[in-house]
Length: 156
Image (cartoon, rainbow, N blue to C red; front, side, top):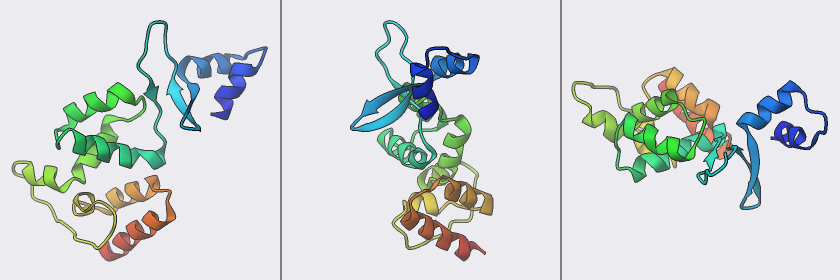
């Protein structure tokens, strides 16, 4: 964000500054600076760049709001408001949703149960250490991170 703000104010711009300004802009939302995709003439829809710490909650909220619909529907809804959420991240989230996994035909997986304030439908479908490490790498809050690490210890 700082690089984008610098690129906006510097008088003699370098090629890097032009690239930054082509793909990023900064906007104040609720007293916080948010990274957005620059609006073109006539556009009114703002597309936000999501930080790693926000990613899980955004995917969780959207998934519940659309009623556990599949990857394509979720990608479409995510794409309306967010710029940098990939299909791979959506797929990972969907693999962690218990209800979606239960509704998949022919797939049976190991379900883990834990006492945690993290969403149970997500925790129940963590099957590999890699999936758990992916979640840990995206969690910044120490309280939640400790809970995820306790799940990791239980898996070992």
